[in-house]
View 1 (spheres, rainbow, N blue to C red):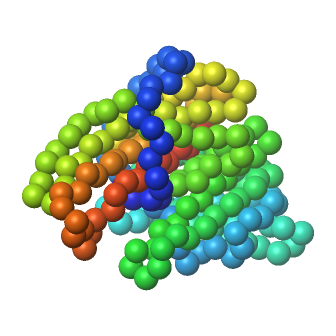
View 2: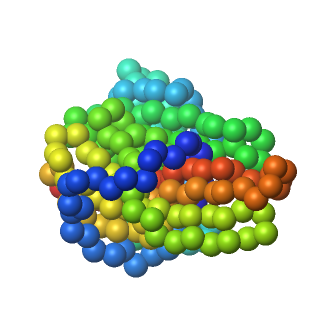
Length: 212
């Protein structure tokens, strides 16, 4: 999964214990349609939520927001086992952006309501954040050494954290039920010439409210 590419935070552990979780039996990845951003930020009412079968068994969502009679459309995909708590008539705020360009363009999306986060793929609504957690694996190649870390998810209004890994987990946090995954990666380059696909570090996440 590569939703966002950002500089890593330090790999120190948070003092708060992670919340308990259950594994979600899917390895599907989220995605955001980069051509479906009518405007970077809108607040309105969900006029419709439709789904269609997407690539690799994913569900492609099309979300239409009514803003004083003007529709704004956004599109994203999720594994079918991860069902967002989106419903027609719900007042929401949608924020989106595209990073990179051409074949490297990547969409990011944050949907929230009065109770907080509904869907976050690569970007968060205000008050939410994520940081690098404990070291998980290290692999070595001729070009660079790559280390993966867990991701610690922080929600507003609580000192609890959720530990994310590259595999969906379900947990309760800040009064709601979520499914989420995440990956933080750091690469140590050998020598001075970077290979064409080289990215020094990134932190990816997807967080979806699935229930009350």
